[in-house]
Length: 275
Image 1 (cartoon, rainbow, N blue to C red):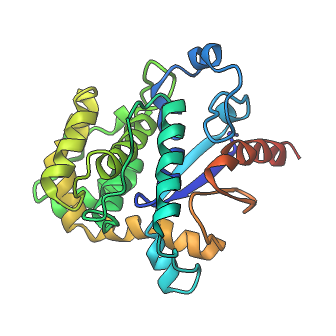
Image 2: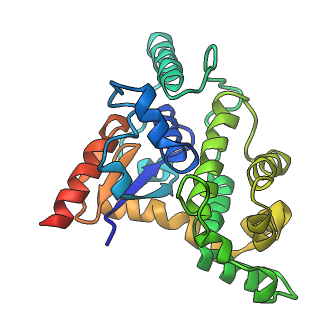
């Protein structure tokens, strides 16, 4: 059985962005080709380590500030100019190593931090077929399962990943790009439709099975099933003792805090399963 590693992240935080890029690239790029171009990958960018391909990374977008409110973590300190500048420089150069060529990633405080519940709701729909099916039954008056075929989720793309993994990781990646590079509000419905359109245009069977962006948006806004499912990762993070993000947690609750520990988490998850 493939070992699993939960990836707890929040779309407001720069180092979560880096982990989201790596998970996205695992499912949407040719990793073997990257091995030929990156002889010495950094710990913050490596997606070529043999253990990584053996692990199922489960994305868990959370509301980090709920952890803070419940005393599970300390509030992020106010970023003084020097520290904020360093974080953005570090994010920019690491994204460049990951192949994302932006001149400079800016932290636009006019649209940061952003409320995450809408994004997390959409993510929960893309990440889990049961969440979608139960929400559709709840919200869509003339719902018929045969009109929302979920078999696309198990179909593999050209890189060997399921479309469920490719699309959900692509969505979370695009949300980070929208916040940190395009500086748009992901709380706006039109922005979310734009993100979903970009992703689903490549996968018409998935778009049809989900009812298109408008159906996804409707379920995210109206469904109690989705509301509960989208909060579950935040509750799981609190129950597991997560205090920072990104954090990687394997099935034995071994925790690894920080983007540069992604490979460590994969190695230990594989070793734990062998034992």
